[in-house]
Every structure is written in structure tokens, then in C-alpha cells.
Length: 98
Image (tube, helix red, strand yellow):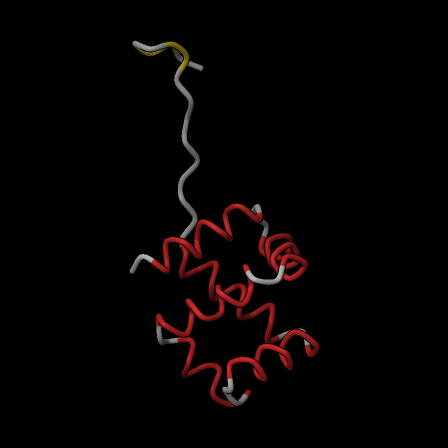
């Protein structure tokens, strides 16, 4: 660690791409029948329409709304894609500010 003018400097980890996390979350949900069934029922979208819907930034925000509202799912998604749950929440926040 280098010393800066105010003491030791810390490297800030690069922000995780919120679109990447949202797409990975959708991939995880779609690949797990129980999670997919619940998500499809709540979103009102058909399973055949997922690919097309994924191109819509508003839909990806909906995916992230779903993930962060369900803590067990949040933890599963974070573990599956190799990021912290906080990174998933941060991605949700960044998507919601667009």
C-alpha cells in the first residue's frame, strides 16, 4: 500500500457492470425451474419471451428488483456469479438510477 497525502491509499475495486449482473441473475433464474416459475408468475411474462425481454433495460431492472427483494435468492445469485451480495445490491441501485 502506498502512502498518499492523507495516509495509506487504498485501491478501490472496480465497479461491477450492473447489466452483466442483471443478465447473469436472469440466466440463473431461468436455469432453475423453481425460481423461474416464481419469477414468470410475478412478472407476467412467458418463458418464450425472456430473451426478447432481456434486451429491455426496464426488464433487467425488474429482474434485479425481484432478486434483491428475496434475500435467499440474492445470496444464491451472488454466489453463482462470484460477486458479493453487496455488489448485486449496488448493481440494482445503479440500474434504478438510469
